[in-house]
Length: 635
Ligand code: WTA
Image (cartoon, rainbow, N blue to C red; front, side):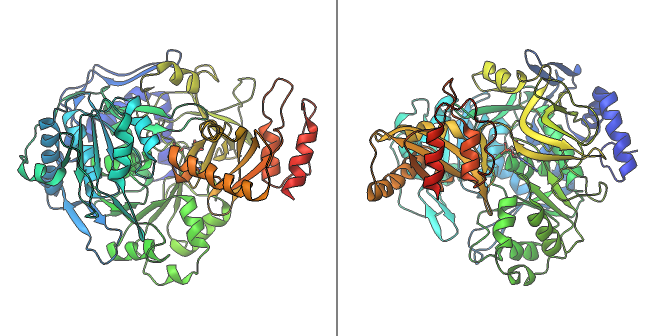
């Protein structure tokens, strides 16, 4: 029996049972047999969900880049590690071998050191999907600096908030980025963000779009000349298993984005193990995940998981619609991609276009299709299965979170029979539980509840940067001795899980998590706005879109309202980013509230979704006339 690569369903059940009965032995064997450690652990696991504190492989020492790069040099030095596919299809793809990756990461690591970056320092990376992004991430890991990648679609305000929250000493960016037919002035955004970031001492700038940017004397430097002068050897910093590897921000339903802290040993073991199994990874595969490295999917399944397995991982700079809607499939054909991992929102957008965009290309290299980020609806699942996979490639609907670090629920391809919209079974080591509103676990089959995890797994986030109390409150207080995911789920008669969606005030728009409160806070800053409430409503491409109900300090009409709508979306773009813009804005004289003053979002959600036949219990409603007014004005 192989614990590491599961090949049959009975084997899955056996391995799974072992992982639950003897979790320490299970994870010890995997860690022992498949990774390079500088020093062995004293203890595989210690944990307490009350504090909460979790430690994996305590006492062990390692460097994750030795596992992702150095150890492959003898056998795979010339193999492509990163295959970079540029935004513009006429620009040549770049094949970076493991040997070249080793040299480029070391050079970058030496540049960081020369700029005074050392173990434990935070480095903010604000780059487009170019090789420098993956290389800078690995260079930080090489010297033990903590990377904090911020998705290069966030605004200057969102960027500065994240830089300040973790006191980054350095920012790595580029002159700009290509996105389809557009270019974005990233350096300008960084300059604006840094107007109030006292901790930042230096900025390194990669050249990508060859634009004219201003460089601040004493702070900013072009990256390439520094790299050219740097040595290609850099001894890895030896890290403790529980030393932080990175911080990645994710939106909560309220307040500041949460800087989730991931540590080294457990994260490495779990992302590598799940990559191998969920994608049925084999030696000569060409694996492509279309996510951005600015999100957890990119961290775990473009960079760390694939490289720890010695895989070839594709990095795509572009968008699915440029130069036309066939771009993804063109890339699959060109590079003979074997595993393709994307988000439902991309699938829905492509499914709306002519089938000819898919049929034009030879997709016969594909053997596994993946989905992540939000529930995949049945129609999109079938479109993906029929037209992309030609019913030959199993779809792995992978459920997980920034906080979980790695995939938690997913079919294992060619092992687990799939059903559309079901993430199916927990991976080895994952112990899900469904909870009712009174905090009791719901046993049995054909039940639904709040999804929790009752036992630690190696890649779970250990804390929120600078705010352990919030970590405890958000994830470990709703249910005793459980990690609470914020999602609802049902379990069917064979034990398969289906995620039903968020049960908190987080809305997933095109796969991006958006908290309602932070957006409301921004809207309320507009001088004309008294109060606002945001809800989600179903959207056929984005999954959900945002609907804002806004009350004004003084009522106005017509043209004034149109201007206000623009202004509101403008401040949202400035403070958060264009992904948080509202699709619909309705001005109202008030918001429906309970007698205790809480906004009744349930009602607003129903109105926004055009589902007003039954508004549910409205007995605690303080101002029913407002509900009437809102419904009339929708029409
Ligand atoms: C949702 C992305 C249904 C879920 C890796 C989760 C999903 C949130 C799925 C985390 C899926 C992710 N089916 N819902 N396969 N995958 N989600 O932190 O609500 O960006 O809590 O991590 O996305 O989003 P995050």
